[in-house]
Length: 65
Image 1 (tube, one colour):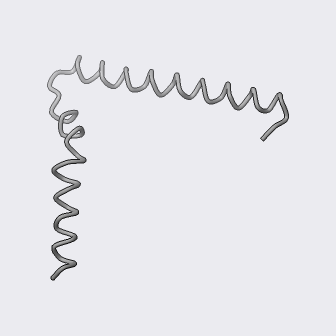
Image 2 (tube, rainbow, N blue to C red):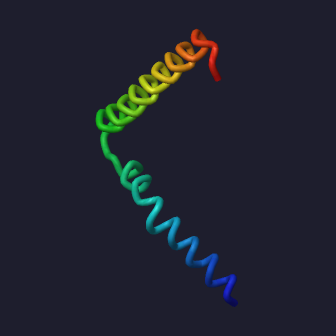
C-alpha cells in the first residue's frame, strides 16, 4: 500500500510539476512562433558546441587533461 502511494505521488509530481514547461512549448500556436523557438534553441546549442570544442582545443594544445 505504501509503495503504491509513493509511485502515484511520483507520477503526479512528474506530470503536474516537471512537465509544465513541455506543456507550454507544446501549446505554441503558429508556424512562425514555433520556428523562432526552435531556431533559438538550435542557435544556443550550436554556440555552446563551438565554445566546448574551443575549450577542448585549448587543453589539447597545452597537453593537459
